[in-house]
Image 1 (cartoon, rainbow, N blue to C red):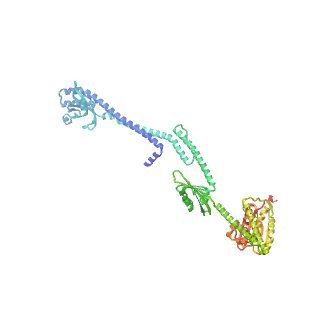
Image 2: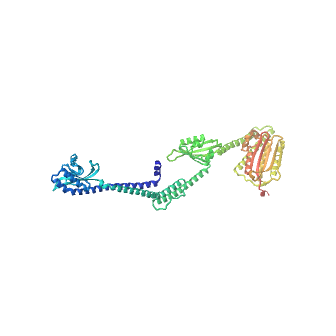
Image 3: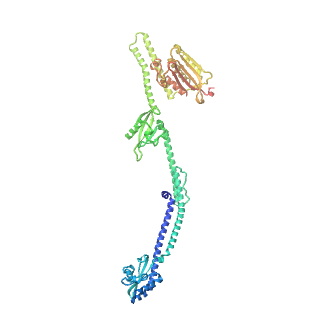
Length: 611
């Protein structure tokens, strides 16, 4: 209970104000009571002293007369008792040496037991010719008495002392009621102060409590609230200042949000991954590209340890090396998961005020670049190899004909035929390289014509009748009726299918079959119709592991046999690019020792165009 009260006082300003006001009133009432009590005591003592002085002066002449003539103790005692009766005071007559000669409350025969009063304060003052006064507890009656002693004079000489004494209760007996009235008044004042305190505290603290609630809402992000500003006093000024602060704070927050959104949009729009790590190895920032590279989901990056977010030993080693280097540090790493990639990491120091330096890692995905560099290197090597073989043969036979011509003209003719065959191979290789270069660079302009797929296939097959007959290969075609027209470049499409049929005849053994089938298909989800032209052969087939690379330049499944057949290794690469230029699809299916099927799907011309 006490703890709850203490907590209430600590947490509620209204309680503090009320208790403060009540405390002030209580202290003021207590001070006033103490002052009044002391003032009453002084007044009582002064009134009683004046009363006793007056009584003593009335007795002066009678006491002087008794002391002038010898009087017995009994006579003096009787006088003292008579003098004390009207005032109810204690009357004592003392000689100059302090001996008590008469006392209204002591029998004459007992006066000898009383002590000498010469050392009493009031006695000393009276003997000095002044009115003596002293307030003390009487030994004989055990009560506080006010003693007033007056000198008894004979002319200018003091001949004795008369002392009167009365208890303070004779005057203060009525003060109890006064004290009760003062106590009741103090309690009423405290009650009134308590009520006024509650009222004033409520009026003063209500705006403060409202501002506290508004400040709490602001801390929770609700910046649309406003503090009350009804009054023109300090609380009203505080409310207006709070509203201005909220408006400016909201503007600053909106500005920060806008800047953060811009920075986030810029970072997320970057091709490079960006990863910022502080000096405590805690991730400060990751853009979307970096998340995608390392397979980190949203909400799993910022604010977490670097080792926990990215589990890649090579990147951790780059991080440590970058911190040691102290400058720009670059390194490449191979990432296996979630995809096989080659990444180039640039580490730049990140210096934050009051913290150990961290790092900003800029990560470039150079997988395609490295693949292209490999393709370029491989292409140069392949072209060099393909050119070197016929050039070596041509040069050898030409040198033989120039320096040591054979005596038999038939041998010379054979040499020239070999030179002619290799020259033709060089010519075809050069033409294919130029064609492929034009197709890849987009320099080839396709002339859009409406073509009949059946007629296109018939023209292609006419080129190979003799070649197929020499190998006893059966050429067949099957064209579905009612096919729509094709929109494409006649020369390029003829080149495409000539390459396919040429490959099929080259690799099909004697008495094999090469067939062409033309059908209409529709793409998924109800798209536009396509014309599918399939070229099938009964050759040796292509191993499954080679199928993904079969359309690459100079890629050969059986290199020795391909060169014997006179191929350049660029035919299927040209086919792929021609299909792509016509926005078509190319697929290759093959079964070892059973044959290969190449399917080319080309979009059909729209119906209104075909008409």
